[in-house]
Image (cartoon, rainbow, N blue to C red):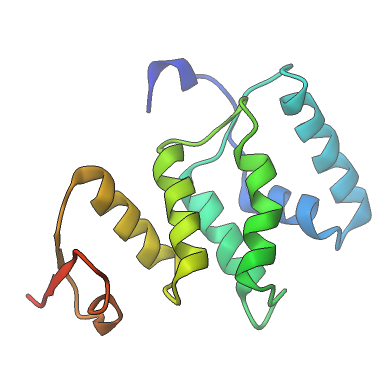
Length: 142
């Protein structure tokens, strides 16, 4: 993790979910206050990519919120663009969100594709045939 992020607090998925869904108004209010401080530049908050991936999983889950991809991305993007809301590999994450909207792949799969783009990698070892139609990617099975 870059040196400038050392010592700053991290955030867990549940705080973001409460903020975005309002399913617990008291916790939503507390989460909103936290993000107001981030937006005002009073504090820096770190979200590992796994937290954002977990948010997408929870919000899209048929057993939980069952939100469509467009709504999920629409809810998350304003947070992800806050300058003091730090996400390691932010550009890769934002590219993955674009791919998530443009494909039928899971967020985990499109994050792999976004990482491959960044690294100029063209070969992916996977048993998942869902990658077969992706232009510029050669899927190989081990």
